[in-house]
Length: 195
Image (cartoon, rainbow, N blue to C red; front, side, top):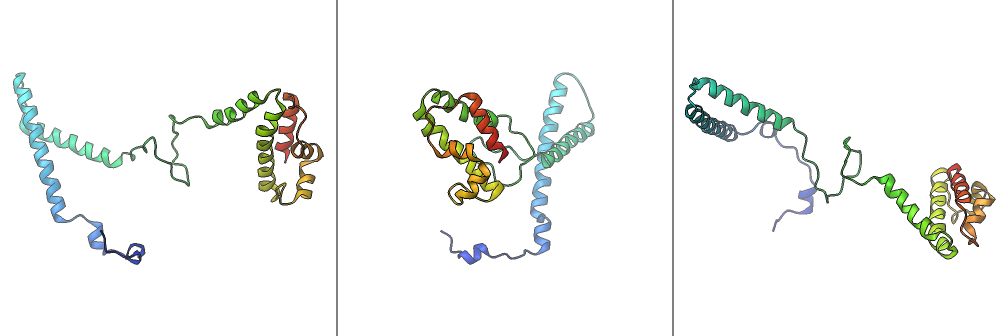
């Protein structure tokens, strides 16, 4: 368990520029040693493979080729984009990364299904329409009123009624006797879009 206080965790102190800017000598020597070992191992394998098939190539060409491949590999690794997030991970809020997630579900299709299924289920049933669809339409109207006019039906009923208009206000405020026809529902949606 750590003995750091919350102040230590939240404090900001600048590190000396010399230490943060360049790797230590041990790190550079370790990298060179690892590169030399990998180069030697690959050169040995290539030379043995070439000799097995009867080819003789000067060692310096093989070493140069291996070093070139390792350099290209290191540069491409440094320039490669970060790996994609895991499938179950949440996307961070804020700006979009600029890439399209082709594996995700289509949001438009999801939104359409979110309305299509309940509308189909409520067709011809006044109780279901009043319980399921009418509250959703009311929420949409309230959200449009809030975004465009700064009111809701609950916060300022008189102003909301004036903005919505009498037919839409009556439709949202009173339970329907029968579910509206697709034409009537299209007219209601058109009125909601005008808000």
